[in-house]
Image 1 (tube, rainbow, N blue to C red):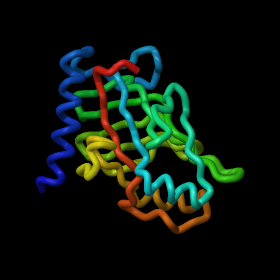
Image 2: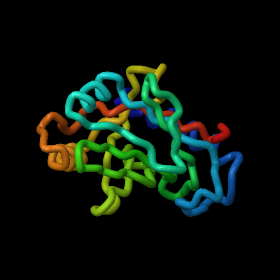
Image 3: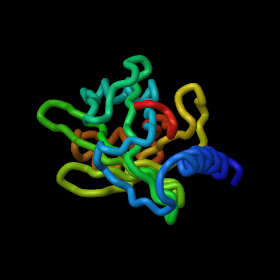
Image 4: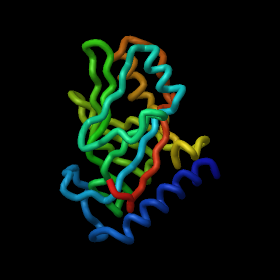
Length: 182
């Protein structure tokens, strides 16, 4: 139980910091780039990047997200809104995963603290739970660990013609930075 509560506590603390400085107490998440309230940094786990590369998959960034570092591969996604009523932090931008003629585009991520999930819009499909939020084992890479949901693993396997990805496969790490300049 403590392993579950710790990542929740970390994200709730970041969310509380955001709430103290930002707008009205029940503002709806937005996906416009007009209002930026910090960013979340997502770092692809080095072993995961190596596995994706071996499958011929190349990650990319969807604006207004931006590349933060190539080593380790990290992207920054602007926080565009939040909702207190169900503990959600909304983001703009996203990532692409491409191999040959296939590109999977994931955008407009929502961190859902109440459910310990991260959802995103998947081009051609709609909003899907992509990651489960877990306790970080690499605080140098992120405050929490992101592991694939069964649906996300299945969809990516189908898109790229593999069976290498499974539920709870480590994708990477995330750290919300509500006061940071984007």
